[in-house]
Length: 283
Ligand SMILES: [Zn+2]
Ligand SMILES: [Zn+2]
Image 1 (tube, protein in one colour):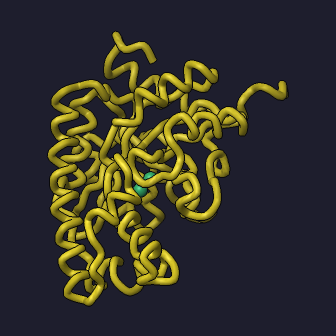
Image 2 (cartoon, rainbow, N blue to C red):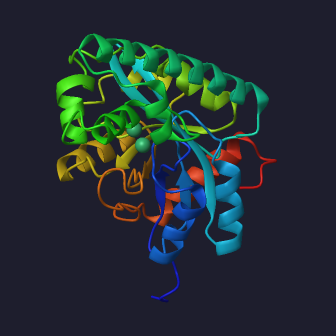
C-alpha cells in the first residue's frame, strides 16, 4: 500500500468546543500525522468548532465531515445520537442547539447547588475556567473538582458525586432520542445511534421509525461480541455502519484518535446516503 494513503476514517472526535482538550485545528493536525482520513468532528450539542476544523482540514488535506453528537434521553437512559454531513449553518438547527445549551446550563446550576449542599462549594467560575468557550458538561465539573482538590481523580468525582444515582446527579432535560433524530434529519444530516453496546439495541425499532439510519459499530467501548452483534443488527435492518475513537484529546488520558478506525467503504456508503438526501450538496 502507498504509505501516504489513509488506512481508515475516524468519525467520532471531540474538540475544545465541547469536552475535548484539543482545538479543532489540533484535532485535524493529529489526524494528519496519524494518516487518518476522513475525520468527523462530533462535538456534544454544538457545531461551533466546525468552521475551524474545515479550514484546518483544507490546509492539511484532511477531509473533515461536519458532524455533531446530540445528547438525548429515552426511558430514563441517556442516549447519544450522531449526525453526519449535517447542514451545520442552518439557522433552525443552530437555534435548537442554543436552546439545548440553555438547558445544559440549568442542569449545571442544579449540580452546583447539590454540591454546595454536600459541602463542596464549587463555583460556576471554576467550571467555566476549565470548560472555556465550549459546551459544559459533567466532565468539566469533574475536572474542576479535581483542580480544587475536592477529589483525587475524575473517576472519584463521578463515583462520589456525578454518576447516575449519586447525590449530585441531575437528570438531563433536553431532547428525547426521537427528537434528536428529527433535528438531525431536518438539517439533512444522517442520524446514527452512538456506541450502543450490545445492550443498547432495545430501542432500535422505535428509533428506526423515528428516522435512524445507522449504528456506530466500531467504538472503544465495544468488545468483539458487541461488534458482531451490532454488525448483524445493522445488516438485518439495512442500517449504515460507522465508527470512531471518541477521542477527547488528553481528557481521558491518552490520545485515542485513529485507534478505532472505520474502513473507508463504510464512509462511502454514509456519503451516498447523505447525497441521496440532498443531491445538491457537495459531499
Ligand atoms: Zn457519546
Ligand atoms: Zn463522543
